[in-house]
Length: 356
Image 1 (tube, rainbow, N blue to C red):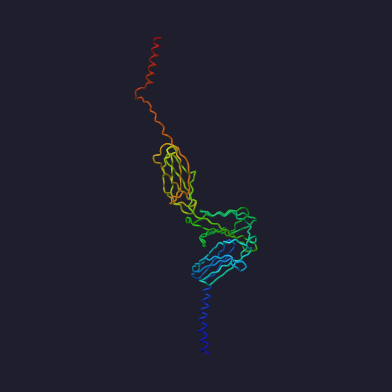
Image 2 (cartoon, one colour; image 1 turned 90 degrees about the horizontal axis):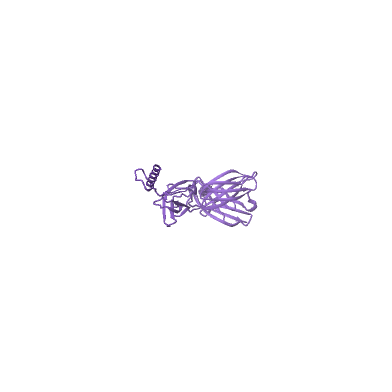
């Protein structure tokens, strides 16, 4: 009897330890939040230990997959990771089921579902009039159908990761409302970014209605030559240039003048002292060398390091002829013909008086 008990313990103990290990591994990774509408979907995953796996997003109708996306997942111990995907297919039905599954190799270790509604079922009480991300920030214009209050989260995505987010809470929508957000970080030139607006409409007796909106832009260098600060005269040209992008502009001021009569052209180039980003300015100038009198067409350019013109301004310049120098008689010089003639006339008049 004792030996049988020992055999049972020897068999059961490793099994208990194995099951405890499996439960511990399963509990190490969990989905703390999951959302989806028919525009986008996001999941937040927490882990008590370092985890590398993948998240599989699926959109289902009547149990059948309509669309799926697979995203690599890397979570640090005692940290969280959020992944976002953009659905690509157009909806054909009113209701769908979104599902996300977390895989460790080929094994599902966590899963969550979310009901997705399309059409009038999920319409908010506002209309998005404008949603325009640019090199410097984002402009969002909402037109309410009915008064409401919303929370607006703006997210900048690099692939499936959030690189920046900002939330405006308790925004009152009673009239047309504009939200402007300036990017507080630098952008990479020629890189495509996705911007998502996640808007939570407050409801009195229900959880917020959530809608997402997507827009894309490609980051580029952008500066502006300020026309009111362009000064061109016979001595040279002075120009103020303002940054309009979070892509740093480390470029050149290039000034070209062409004589309208002779068609002769001179070009001057000078590197800007400051590297420009949104809202910053710098002033630069050039000095003409031997510019002859005449009429000139002047072209002012802001060029990047690859000699690509980012902005251009054109104007005209006239340099007048120098005034002729007129010689003036002085008392030390011999009298001229006019003076001698005047003296002779005075002497003749005097003789007539005596003779009379």
